[in-house]
Amino acid sequence: MTVTFTKSFERSLKTSDQPELVRASVKRLLLALEEQVKPEGLGLKKLRADLWEIRVTRAWRVIFLMRPGEVRLVLVGDHDAIQRYLKHNA
Image (cartoon, rainbow, N blue to C red):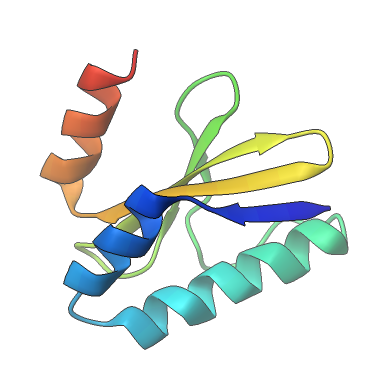
């Protein structure tokens, strides 16, 4: 499985108030995907055909594209940032 960190993900990670927690959540997600099990405690949610979201904290989310053989991490943000992304990337 190929994992890609987009520039928007890297930029938004810097604005997160808990970047280590974001990294730990992403690591848990990737391990679960490699083992082909549902990640526990991350609130995995399908947003669109290949766009997914995990919950890092009550406020912060990570969205990513999941395609066969690839996970592309797109954005770290709060509810408003995620909604803006979804609106502009329909």
